[in-house]
Image 1 (cartoon, rainbow, N blue to C red):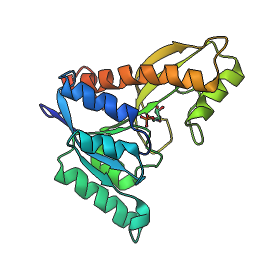
Image 2 (tube, rainbow, N blue to C red):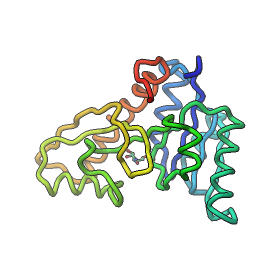
Image 3 (cartoon, helix red, strand yellow):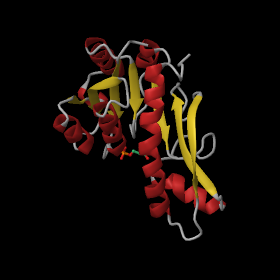
Length: 201
Ligand code: GRF
């Protein structure tokens, strides 16, 4: 890993996890900086958060390109231009093209709002995750940071933190409590990657 980690964050919606990473870098809790934010969604508030922090923010979607390959090449070009060491997915609702995964070779991580391998996979996102946890009657859920491979929510688990399910929880209240823990765990995991305490094989 480089001395000071150069990070790209890919995101699709509100970007609260992006904000937690921006804040942790600004506070010196991560030995690194976010130098690029990419969203497939033009209306993503994450793009605004990035701009307010002075970070290059790009709306890049496959729809704007003639082919999937052209899109993948454009992403790789950006990663090269900004000398990215690590990609953090934070609510990014798309698969990264195989060409990008090959280019980054394991240096891409994701945050998931449950204790993988439970409640992961296609269709398990947003409130659906918390609805499934409640429907199963689980007494605990949590947050997972994992390496990204070509299968949804599948790569090596790097960090997890548990969250209790309360008897009167709704999917919305559970989502909020899990999100607060996401905002702690993601910066901590990235800090550990930056320091070498977590190694990405
Ligand atoms: C988070 O719950 C994250 O775990 C999941 O998508 C959500 C993104 O939220 N992958 P935000 O855009 O960071 O607020």
